[in-house]
Image: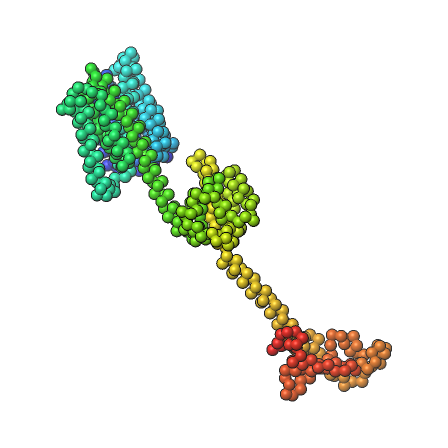
Amino acid sequence: MLSRQAVPVWQPTILTLVYFVGGKLGLSLAFVHASATAIWPPTGIALTAFLLLGSRVWPAILLGAFLVNVTTEGSVLTSIGIATGNTLEGLVGAALVARFANGRRVFDRARDIFKFVVLAGLLSTTLSATIGVTSLALGGYARWTDYPAIWFTWLTGDAAGVLVFAPVLLLWSVDRTLRWSRGEAIEGALLLLGLLLGGVVVFDGSSPLAAARIPAAFLCMPILVWAAFRFGPRETATGLLLLSFFAIRGTLQGFGPFALPTPHDSLLLLQAFLVTVAITTIPLAAVVAQLKRSDEVHARLAAIVESSNDAIIGKTLEGVITRWNAGAQRLYGYTAGEAIGQSISIITPPELPNELPQIFGRLQRGRRIETYETVRMKKDGTRVRVSLTVSPVLDPTRGVIGASAIAQDMTEQKRMEEALRNAEALRAVASVATAAAHEINNPHRCSWGSPAAVQGKRREARSPPAPDRSARAHPGCRPDHATDHTLGAGRTVEERPGDARSPKIEPRCGRPRVALTGQMFPAITGYSAR
């Protein structure tokens, strides 16, 4: 989307002035018609302005285009029609580039550059050429029989403005900094010298090649390819623009490989050459810059992988190891030189013969293997328990070309988990034993041997027993204690002086007394009653 934020007043003013000056320079090279030229820089100026400043600068573009045409040839109405076409050309081209070709960052990727060529270099320029020539024909300032020639010249000039001038303006506006080292600065100076030398040799009248009109324009290509590989799209576009100045000057003077009998035909042929070079070298520079960025990202990722404590292994779908980091060396014992190129089966135990086929079967279908625990084999043959995650490696077309496995040593974690389970089990046993010791060694704390119950039983002991038939079933026992004899309810607890650790439990029935002392408790339970 184009920005719609307000812009300072001075920006539209300067934009109108720059557009007007560029338009006058372009129309000074008009041969087929006063309003149609093969060199039209204002198209690149308008497109860059809309991409950088947004759609609100359209009045400045409209005013600049109107002033250029009304001071050249035609009426106010035809000038308004031409200015409208020029404004729509830039506005539509910028909107299409912003929507489909990454906007102001269009020159970061080659595929966006080719979209830029089609959307801004062909479609939007067709709009301007059609509206402009139609306005001239309707106003009587151009003959309908000359319509095709004027239209083609108009289209060529606008396309050259988009593909030769706009890249330089846009790239330097987005990034104005020069981050060159000393060596790069020297190389840049040599590149500039090569461009100047190439322009003079191929296009200047002082050169025998240019004077003889020998088709040596190909000599300029290695210099631009050098700029594309070593610097980037910005420097490549700038070099092409610099070369175009030499080419236009020499061609108009009748020198160089594009000098034809008429200046108009010469400029059309030259612009075709410049456009061809632009759509060849600038995308090449973008591809090289993109590869450099990818290499930097890969280098950072490789450093992260190499420094990871986990074992990270890359492998093909055939199971051949292609990547082996330091974590894998620490875990399995193999060095990278020993492991890379070998089968992944060197770390797979023989007792797991079906694991690898199942993993590769899922990977070939593009499915990720969720984290699971398994066993792997070290170089010395010992087994190690690991947590393993396996993911497919995809190419740009989303095809599976390999796999990446991340393994984490679970030995220490399993040891800690086992120790924790043992500690929890011991705590549970100790808790049960403590509760049992408390109940057995301290029966007066129980509900049936509470102090109140004991005192109540003692009062009952001092009163005469009431006759009861149940007394026959328990001779020698008091009938009111017959039913709870088993639980020991109503027992009398006595603590003899000098033996505080040994409470005596004496039943009230006539059976022999049994004294459970503190010395007997450990022998029965295995725990101390303290």
